[in-house]
Length: 350
Image (cartoon, rainbow, N blue to C red; front, side, top):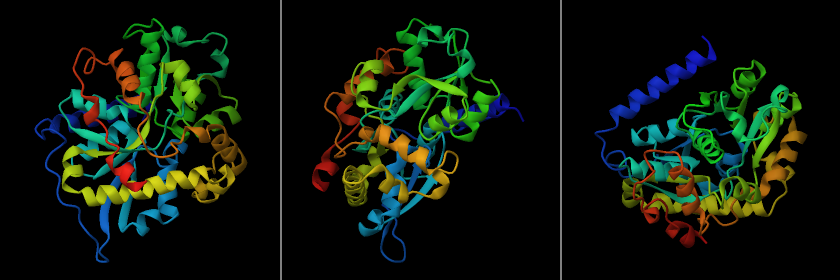
């Protein structure tokens, strides 16, 4: 089956599931009290938009350092390369929480769903727009995206959001470029290698894999707060732990324990070197590029991790500005940003 056909089928499946959620109401239905395992630990199912991506590294790090367990949490982690699919699974009640980009909370509120970020893991997107090496002289800015096929993790994903914003900001009208869902890692690399995409947005370690193979070059680098401000106009909070508002209200103990574990993890990151952090990650996370390259990539973007888990003061407005530039669901609608995140649990964890 071709990559394009697989992408089409994935979109159809996601659309069908999304339509089935329309009767779920605000926040995706009624959350149940958190279950406990035989040992008395609170069981929380967390879906991550790509566990092996460095932008979501704090999740597996918290697990491997034993911070979830120390809080009395049995964290059942599952992997979904596209954040939009993780969001859909949570709204369907298949998982309790998602680690994905904060922007989904704003998009969802515009669609009548109530979710909120409770811990902010990143203060920059950690994304890079990569252009195919053979097109680097022709595609020098997003203004050159007209007529191009652009890789994103999934349609409706945060990479799709950011790509559409860069198009809009640089005069590329809707429909003049085509977003192609290619996932991340090996599928993204294959799409670039087979010339199914001309450029695409991805994260580490996929960025290093592309450069190592000579397949693509960085065009727009948002791995640091400075790079994000230059491209997006302000601080852009990205990876976070978010849940339905209903779950947060009914399970404050579980949410607090999760916040405690993640805040402890963020502090641990600040106090250790990229090499020390890498030693705590599964070996298959860096098998595609090699440990040295993985460590170097982490060294280049370590500043993207939040030092404390708090939402940056100007962050939500920047994200709203970005979404309002192209997203018809958000554009022209009133969004209460105060309901898309809370610092309450992080403040208590500190």
